[in-house]
Length: 391
Image (cartoon, rainbow, N blue to C red; front, side):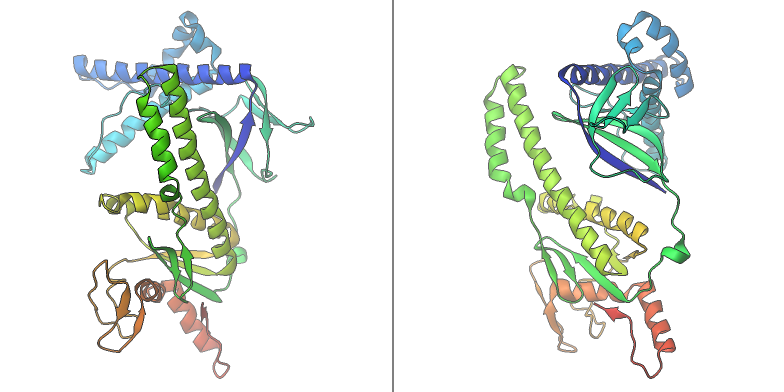
């Protein structure tokens, strides 16, 4: 399996200037490659391949000092990224999806470059750990957690986030042995995600929604208004734009940190975690709920839970969303509700529960692993009263 490890970089002023120049060079190479593909198709109705464009790099570097200053594999990866963009574009067209034609990258919209194979190395021997990059030199790096000794670093991506720099290592790790790592299902939990409460569990516990974006909206609006008052293209407008971007970064990091901690708690506490199979991209098309759904970050939380569970031996299962809200968890009858109805009151069996609590119970009851573990526990514990605990 592969995992990505991200670390903060602390380049000197000169190194930061070099990294920024590399990003500019890579962006221009990307745009030139895209322009060439468009021109060749318009004039000759012919597609340009990655190999054809990569073969031109050797001659281009002889006449372009900026291309010559960048590591050759980094330049090749830029063209490979462009080729992947076209591959995805044609794949979406074949599937009948609404595919947007690849676009040119504007200034400040190209923020990373990758060493795909070599040209980088971590230096642990000095007091300050450094990342050595070909043609750039050693950059101070904060290794806040170790890369596993059994892992093999495949690629190194240098990323800019406003005024911060990061190194992202893709590490190949040995796959965990399923038989030895898989935990016995003793505690199972059904999870209903929402907006009022971020999570509602089938035992009735709720996790409040922090609403990081909503909490910072006034400050964000104030900073945005100040930017809009500046003259377009001016240095002051650019400085204020960076302040807006920094505030968005703070909100993003707050949400990410919260999801990391919450997913770790779920994985450590439970052996089976059951979510709904949500299509979030369709849900955010509702303009009245789109901001709140994006602020909650359900997809990120599920992703974090899934990869942590894989390492810990916990099972994560996704079940159908069909009528999880309308179905009564007590008798199985359909009880229609609107979005404003927050209490589930069944006229057939008399069950009264919070709407999300009822949904969480229904979600757990649809889990294949939970039903199998229940039946196996019943058959192996005759007379002992042992059951899988639906926490």
